[in-house]
Image (cartoon, rainbow, N blue to C red; front, side):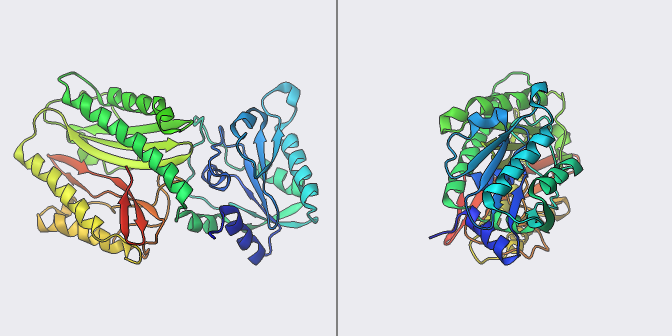
Length: 387
């Protein structure tokens, strides 16, 4: 029988001499609770080396965790003046858990020491990272020592999804493809639309379509470039502008979707009106490049080979200098997650359960940029495109 996420971490804690782990990053809270998406990043999962895990959340989020039966839940007061200091309240919650687990003083605590990026919370205006005051609350509450970094281990086990997680990530992809389909319909109409108008329509549509797939909360972030601006669409965090999309424009839509804290990362390149023959050829070339990469997927295969296959198609067509970036990364719990990386120097090997993007692109001066991105699940016998 497959180990649960809790059991996987407990094995790590025992092997590394830890008494417990305190988990705080949104994506890890989602993973260890099987789908509770914190509203503001002020929640904690406390996992002892042995025994039932606990969940520590702000009072207002009690209604979000009614379905979580396998966790002892502790709430703490925030916001209201009558609640007092939220850090004092957090310390008291940790002290209660310490007593419940009969933890010794100077307990060895595992925690997420290093993380290069974190996923957004449900109410994503800001994210609360652990600061010195929060660290002090953990140390004072458990009377322990923050001694072992668990984040690298969590990232490793997070790279392969279980069946339940795959089904939830599929829902994020379904919502994403609905948003892209809406965009294509809008572009096919002979109506004026700007990049930012198109982005807002996609994002709103996805948020309102959550219930269709049994998703409680859906959020989307669309980054759109059109016309010659697509040449720069390789940039991380490209800014959607108020540019009017005009006839003959490439329209590249980079789309992040989260469904109850599970992510999809999709890109498609459409166009407005009529394209010349050169632009049509480039669209088909990038699709051919993506197909070449797909032929190199499957458990046990090298991720770098998928990159090389995709690039060779573009090299052979004379566009190698416009092939500017790697063609994939892990996704699912985070928009851009870690393993596997599909680049020329990647050492990663595909494993069944990995979910990653496949996204070759070309960015050609004076013509424009084209990228197509899908999310795939690695399987024992090949791969599955998530749609």
